[in-house]
Length: 259
Length: 96
Image 1 (cartoon, rainbow over the protein chains, first blue to last red):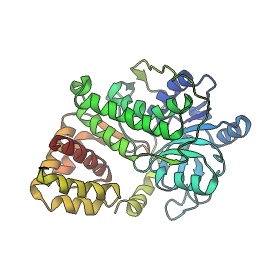
Image 2 (image 1 turned 60 degrees about the vertical axis):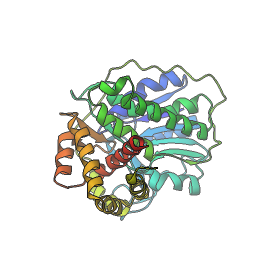
Image 3 (image 1 turned 90 degrees about the horizontal axis):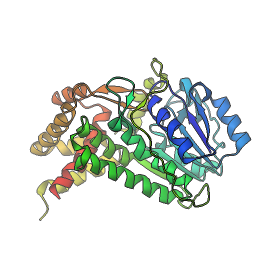
Image 4 (image 1 turned 90 degrees about the vertical axis):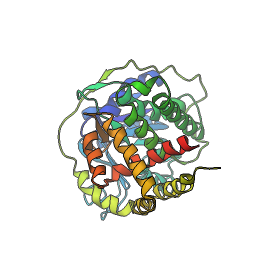
């Protein structure tokens, strides 16, 4: 399977977590991390490896998702939404016949269902609003409250890689969110600093995390669910300052989708 | 018998999930007691994590203090609506 993990401009934490998780759940993982996560490399890897499953994270708006340095990766042509990223169609058939986890904000609004309905993606896991998380207080330490939303979300990948159907993986994802919510609401985590906020983040993230496409889609034969115990805390890998050009699109996006 | 707030919370929740955020806020504000209760809970939760920062995958970052003080002034950012949806979920659990 293929994992596209850019590590700048706000996706350092999910990429760090998945960079540690993927080898545990997928002995054949091909990981393009950091500067390797370019559109050119992603296309080349998909063409050469023909992976049935692709995980990608990056910035997202309803019509596009990006990779390292905000490079457009997959986009619909909706220039009125974002003239830079959605100026033209890009790589829309890349996911034909595959299951994809697009871990970016907003792509569930338009891109994910379009990939399924018009471009033959078998199933797509995506978010139809902003995916929220806590930042480390010291800027670098990924502890439990910081990691929790990603640990819940990446249950999708653990589940798919153990041979579940997409529908089963979606149920596992929702169940994982519920368990983390309970942990920070009434469980042992309720006294951890930040519990009141991460609890609300988890509820919000669960509500926006959807499955599009065929719930019977699978990417591998059934096998025991791999043991995937991350050793926390992790240290953020990567980083880099800069203002995302996509931020300029936010008011437009909001005008279109937020009442 | 269900708590009288439940039906209003359900209506607000439906509007939020449909992306009709302004309508959801108007509906919530139509019951000032409920609005004040919900918003105060949101503020308290945010202030319970002083120095905390919340981010999204697009690189937007907000401090918990900033988000709380905006709510105190009646100012709503899009991210506040994500938290409103969560707050309604929590309140519905509490009210049964």
